[in-house]
Amino acid sequence: MANPFPPALDYLVQQLHHLPGIGKRTAQRLAIFLLKDTDENAQNLSQAILRVKKEINLCQECFNITETEVCEICANLRRDKSTICVVEDIVDIFAIEKSHEYSGVYHVLGGVISPLSGVSPEDLRFSELIERAKKPEVNEILLALNPSTEGEATMIYISKLFKSSGKKVTRIASGIPLGAHLEFIDDATIGRAILSRREI
Ligand SMILES: [Zn+2]
Image 1 (spheres, rainbow, N blue to C red):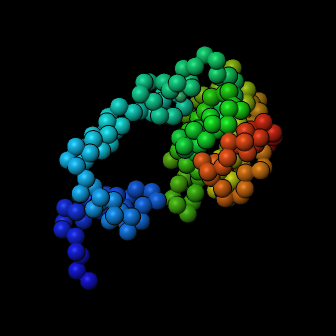
Image 2 (tube, rainbow, N blue to C red):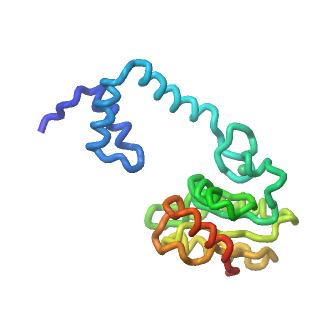
Image 3 (cartoon, helix red, strand yellow):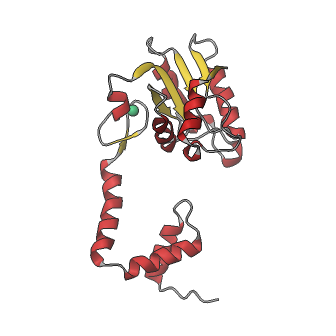
């Protein structure tokens, strides 16, 4: 069947389809919406995308997103620097912050070990975590990875890394269903999971 979309529109469909959660049909609907929208709105959208790419970087300490060198959480003197909470992705920080039950700092790993998807330990920020944890003020590594098979394996890997370090390794408690993503869990459940964490 011939593609009814002119090349320029088809290119936009492809770019939108590349976004997470956007299927082909939705991408087509969005592209047609953008085509009919005002020039001003289209300009604003394209500039907003370019602006985040230019102005937002990763925190030098924890790899959270920030407009400065160090993110707001790391720069906050009231945050407890003795506990580092290890998360897969930046969205997990937002999920945990919403629970208001955690006052330590974070470390964004950048994913989990997944041989099937070709993600090996070298692809993740383990060496940065080990470096950070060497600071004497750090005494707990709190693991808050999503409870998938890969997440579980990665938590075991991290606990082995710190086995003889003298640092306590804990993980958030059950209550988070297997296979669930932290970003979709309600605040109260995340809060409870953090408060009732256990040593591994
Ligand atoms: Zn930071």
